[in-house]
Length: 485
Image (cartoon, rainbow, N blue to C red):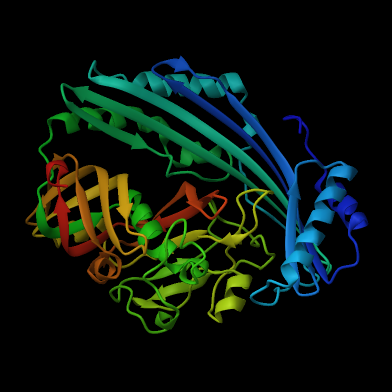
């Protein structure tokens, strides 16, 4: 499809409905995504990237089988071919199905959901966006030891229309901004990196740039990269650990989000991304963390990266407790996985594109605030390290044993924040780590963040997920520096 052509989603839906044969059940998911990416590196404007991706997924259920087919050819002939292939796959699957097909979406839901935008992306023209990035980029070149420096801004507009045989029509619209700054410092054999974003991606318009105070960040990012060149290595040993929201994002993602996916627990990811240490029997009783651990699935947080009104199976999105007072209550599974497993789930069946089926995905997965200020957390540490911003991760195929590295750390002694340390890292076992949770920051330290590059499924689906958290304190963690990893 021409990059400048915007399809009429309802017109496409009408064409498909006209072509559908008599079947037991059907649904259509039509998606149109426009993207723009701007970047400046080492004071050089890189080529602007513009993209457009539109298509339709046709799902058919008939005689006990379910099949689907997708196409970006939105002509009558292209849509007719997709309909025929979906019906044929349903017939072939009927003799091989392991469980009856679930209903393809809700009945008679007609709704529209749109992420709020205060300042439209179009308020700034291309030249103005590039000039702004150029100015940010120049400000990071503080010293000759800064050998690489870049600034960028990505934008996405996603429109989705879900229509089914039960009379439902659900339209959703999301706009996302992804900013980033990155400075690389080098002296001799030592290289250090500090960054700002892209884990600060979120939904909204240009107002997010002011909300994140990006104009105040270039010198800080570059100066911290330079300071890390002279910083001592992170101390090694068993000690207390304070994680800032920038690292909590990764910790939540890998050691809570992925292990709680019901399709993973059922074995669907076994051949690709592994299984989970969580078993079906654990829900309702397993102590996942200390009593301070409270985790919600909350797709209604304004501005968070994976906010939405309905998932891609048409289930209405609602806030749910996954872990409350440390006890595991609910998994991350959409309607299909809930029917298969008999376990409670959430509205999280999501597809990365028109040519992928919905699978169980994280959305906005958040650690709820506690009662401590950041100063309270630091004051309660006799010997430890504060860490921020992930730079490396490793976790086993059951999402249990992990080792993570951060860009930056600060040593804590006798309740006081001391000097900067470089190459900080820590390791642990998921449930034991969360049970060591000894302090959770207050609402005023709660930060909404996100990850735009979560991969899962065969064929792979790259999707955006949101995570929010305050700073958190963990006791007795195995901490190490770069030379002890």
